[in-house]
Figure (cartoon, rainbow, N blue to C red):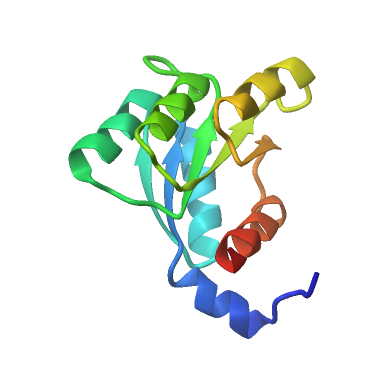
Length: 136
């Protein structure tokens, strides 16, 4: 697989629109900083129910959704299932401290995730997925 030059990454950065779904304020800040550092723009939701409402009522569309697994009101598994039922086509990436637990990871993936990453999220973890998303 060919790697992208910095010029290619610069072009990609300007177009990336990301929804960050997490109930932990610190994780929201970290994930927002990562997206900003790669030139993307982000919106946040404090739980899965907010993410569903953003899509249902706001008609919003995102290239990428970073989805926490364990949240109040609506967890990441049920939120991902609901968004897929709503025909949301965004790449949904689970971000969880439980990524090493195969059973938990499998259940999250089966809900409709495209990928599942372990916390803490880093720029090095997310850039290959962004490149894959932009190549699609």
